[in-house]
Structures are given as C-alpha cells and as structure tokens.
Length: 247
Image (cartoon, rainbow, N blue to C red; front, side, top):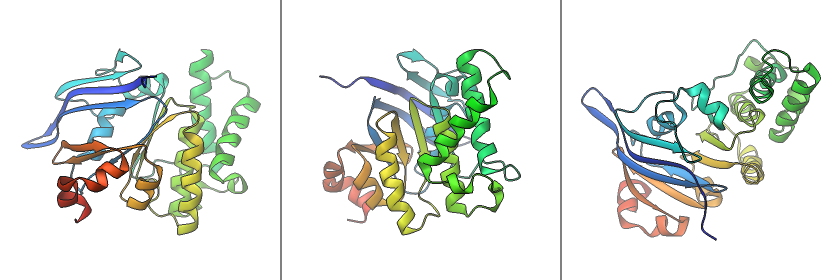
C-alpha cells in the first residue's frame, strides 16, 4: 500500500538579503515515518523547518499539510493543525516548574480541542502534562524549576511540551545536543515509541543517531536538496560523502 503523504513542499524558498537559505525545495514526508534532515552547518536546515512550522514566511513556494495549503497560516494555526516544533535553542519558561511548563502546552492543546479556552479541568491538564513528562523520563523532576535543569534535561522537557500537544508531526531540532551517552540511548528508544503515534522529522548532527533512527534521510547543502534516500543509500552516495560525510 502506498504511503500517505502528511506534509509536502513545492519550490519552497527563503532569502535573507543576498543569501538564499532555502532554494526551491521540493520535499515529501510520509505519514508515520521517521525522517532525518541533515547537512553541513549553514545548509538551511533550521530555516527550512522554521518555514514548515510557520515561524517565518517563505519568499516563494508552498507548504501543504494533510492535503491543505498552509503556506500563509501563522505558527499557532499550524500547532492547532498538528505540527509541533522543538527549537534548537530551548524555549522553556525557566521560572516555572517542569510540570507547569508541560501543563501550559497541555492546556493549549486541550483548549483548542474542546473549544473551551481557559475552562479545561485542571486535573485533565495535569494528567496530560504528567503523562508527557513520564514519556521523557522527567516525572521525578516535575516540581523542579525548569531553569535549574541541566541543558540536556531542558531539551527533554521541550520534547515533553511537544508531546503534550499530541501532534501529528513532531519536529525535533538537534534534540540530542547536551545529552549524555546514556541519555542518548534512552532518547532513541523514546523516538521509536513516539513514532507509533506521530510522524517525526529529526534535524540532527549525531550521525549514529540518524543512521539508527531514520527510515529515510534528506540531505540539504546550500539550501538545496542534495540527496534523499534510506540510510544505506545516503551512506553510499558519493555527493553526500563529499559534502558532508567526509568520504
């Protein structure tokens, strides 16, 4: 059975002055897959996913999600549609507790779903937030101020906040940055578990993690798609080796 396309772009382009950061990118993401997006520094990866999430607007091209053109929709509407994006730089609220951070995301999602802004029972919000923290292994730190967490645990909290939104697409930007080796192992298990319920787009420099997790890999270089394929195909691609893998 043919895979169902969850998200696609056609001719997606973004310029910053004289620099074309994303250059006419055509991209298709299948529902239920784990896709990795890799490339050298400055390849356009973060700009590309910022275009997908609505954080910035394109200069040209389209973004389609679940068959609907969302090119001009703002970020909050894309979140409501089912796109969650964890930033490369943590975006937690440091003075709030770990649980309160996750609860904010849960409250947002439940309010949109129920159409009862501000009237979702606190117990329901807390239960969803607690479940998200449990999935990333932060339950024991629920009462800790988020700013007191290690950088790696702040990244995990950000993932939990994304999960509390119950997204159709979870975009993870450099999620293993700051994690210890043992935490990376647990993170790989977590991503596999998340992929049972959501499509995952992973922007990651840790190539062992990429090769282990990804169903398919897309390589960006100079804002353009250099190659796309299975991990084995990407390993064997001479252009990718020259541009990125050091072959």
